[in-house]
Length: 385
Image (tube, rainbow, N blue to C red; front, side):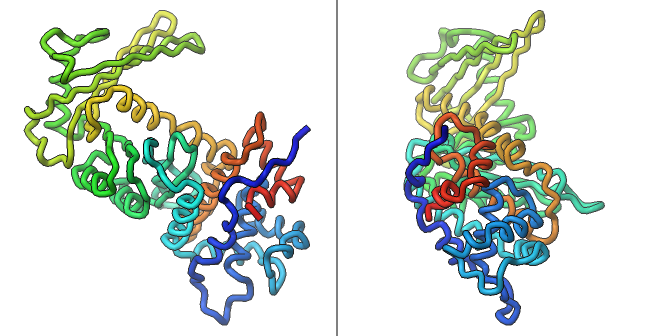
């Protein structure tokens, strides 16, 4: 039997945060308060809803309960009203609210790995248009989505990442980004936020990728457990992990070197201290494969910290992307008008944070949403009201 737990720590005031978001509508057309619309939308997300019709249905069914903490001066908004408001709402104002709320429940990220990664909204596509992408920041150890920004049409993640970094408080953490975000300006911006970086390299980085690839090819023979004898322990470190499951054995070796003075572009990368390589060896039945990936980092020589950052970035797939697609069906969302896709993406991440931080044990995210739909007392505890 499920038992009610105490409210999620420090989430009280979430509705008040929503009430601080600027209203994009002219005053004469504000039949419904913006905070009421956003709160109903969030409650719908928490209880299994997906789109604007679900928001209107939830409001109609739970009207009496909603009136215990919302004004609802003109009743429950229609699904068209939800659509218009989420389409018109400034996503930057909504993001600012999201970030300030997260900072309230997680005042510091010191020591955490913040993975920044993009995700497609495959169904939110107009005929002849491009698939929208959302770039999210995920705090691996705290298990929180920190914020998200939509990639502008006919652009890529390089333009969205600086915008997201700008609003985040990152002091003391390690920021990880895949090869798309491995840019000198982005590295400098992360350092300016008093954080460290671990940036993935690929062939599109030309000279620096080739240099580091050749360095590790000379220093570390394939499948080697130790560095070549010509490399001293003061400049090279290594660790290893082995994972078994589903008929597969995967060995990962993490190599990190502080020998970077020879690099041609070293001075162009802010606070570049180390370079890294991860060698993955997969054995599956009769097939073996070896893959090497390379990184630039401002971390000092500490292979455990380097390995933690790399694993933290890989881990974003399950707790964030998988949860959004499987639990919240984000990949099936068809909201596409104006700002609707980005604002609904923010709403899902707020709901995901509330679901994940709730202390109920041995209850899946899907079950928590069912529980919230059936029991308004539990839903109120999620909201902190």
